[in-house]
Image (cartoon, rainbow, N blue to C red):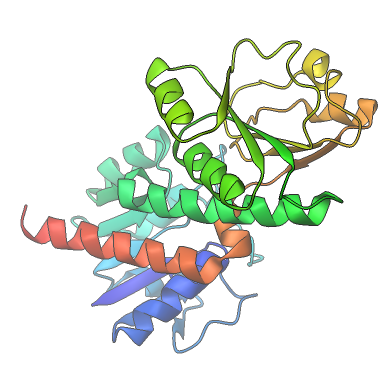
Length: 287
């Protein structure tokens, strides 16, 4: 098959290499600052897209202004520019698709698929994110995880993986959640539990508090309740769950770790994206 990989970070670079290793022909555009092996670098967007069986956009595909995510290129590329070159019926795979992108795809007559909406990719990303979070906690705190008191806020995919990894390394794990079904699992697996909406007065004594919920959980009043030296790690996507301006004023050690799979394990992340896109294309064949 012919693929066009447009923009993106190290994940897309590794994805392009993996596709070439599988014997596919891969055009790349807007990744000029990255070293990518055995691909065809195109100077024009139209040349990259023209003969592609599948056009692959980054994760996330665009900013809120509709600009394609191209951190390793000096090229400013809009989604409108991309879809002006996409042919009717052409397959486009993108990560975290928004309404604007869907509208442009519909206008172009393209078949748009959101690979970030796939459960297989979300599970793999959650595992990588949890592993990266453990790395940050170990680097940013002066204590071992064994015996450390850790609070994980949220019990979605990332919260589940992270609580398990911390517990396996000997940490004393408390999980804050809202659902009774989550409480049942938290208790059954041997963690302590708190209600995420009733954390006031219960935040002292932790060595690390890790938020996975994309809502303002740790505001100034709650940050004041943390023990001195506690690490606050935010894994949630924007707007995040920590008031970082308040944390700075209060001297709270706070870290916002976005897109951890691409930062700590780009090769594994690229592999997961590749496999997910293959699944999409296989399902497309039998539609």
